[in-house]
Image 1 (tube, rainbow, N blue to C red):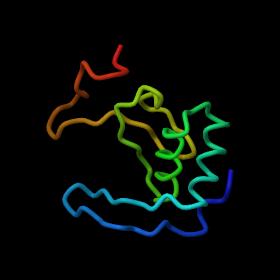
Image 2 (cartoon, one colour; image 1 turned 30 degrees about the vertical axis):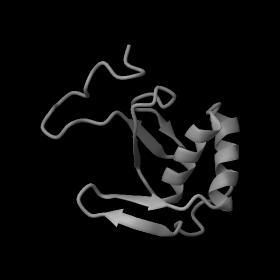
Image 3 (spheres, rainbow, N blue to C red; image 1 turned 45 degrees about the horizontal axis):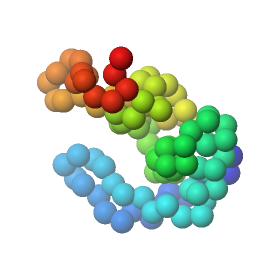
Image 4 (cartoon, helix red, strand yellow; image 1 turned 180 degrees about the horizontal axis):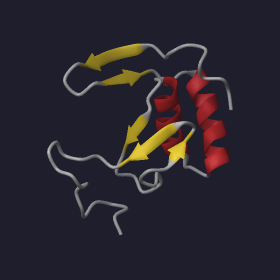
Length: 98
């Protein structure tokens, strides 16, 4: 996989309330996504999400996507189901819930 620690991707905007920010999908992210897709058997769009999270230095990827198993650590990023503030368990009845 291409080395992603060379620098952080340009931040287009940052949401101070949620702590999220958008990261540009550049050639480095695209090449990493291709490698991640092959290594983990992910669809290209899922690999782009993961490669972008890695590039941004994220330690968690919050997703309802069943292609990212809850608790799985891929490329050093832990995939977790979102929780509502104050609820000890994730919401049920969403895609990927069995």
